[in-house]
Length: 318
Image (cartoon, rainbow, N blue to C red):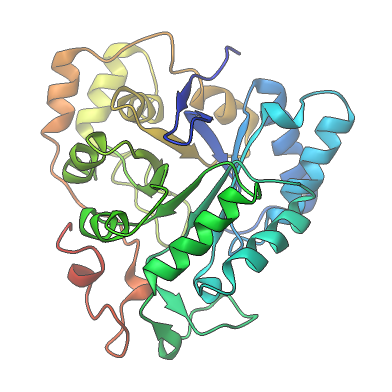
């Protein structure tokens, strides 16, 4: 397979524009996980996305160590992302949480560390299921200062956020010394994030899309992307799959994508998107698709929490 294109982040470091997510439902067996990671590296994947919440940091670390030990890849060729979970979204817990992720991953540094959600939970060893009585407003200024400390200390090359609206990014930028390099959000042709995409283009933040195909096969996913008639027709015309058309659309928006498949043929298909283009007419047709946000965020809404509705969580961007 060809080399996956990269984008230079505001931190000065390069991020491959397609990454492989490591969360799966139900969780993959240890052997299936290891096989998928090794196959992905052999195919050319260099960007791997995990999180404290996912419980996959240790397995990913083992696969990376094996691949490096076999000479398949060098550490400096990889781009490893992890995320700060809400129970650790407190100023004094950020650095310890990152250090724990590094121990899990058997790494000396991350390439990207993200604030997973713009909310805090009471500190706890239990990450999931979420106890809605434990929600706390996030002290974003203090948490971000701790994230900046992580970057300055060399524990991570870049820092960013996930699931932040335009308004929350604006609030963060009003006090930040280091701007977030990335905002990882739900994005696909059914939820195009036009307002957010326009906003970040002007402030040097790159978007990275999760659920680029709608997270089918999970309890929270939908089939809206893969069953979209507009995308099906374009895929038929191009001789491509609906998945490839969706991923190509994201790529042509300048957005990174996190794909999630442990099947070798799908791993190949998901990066076979760089030697062809969607036409201006096709892009225009996709832009007219009726929009619908997926269910991301329902778990963070509570009558007793800082966000009492999805409207509040997403600041009207729904």
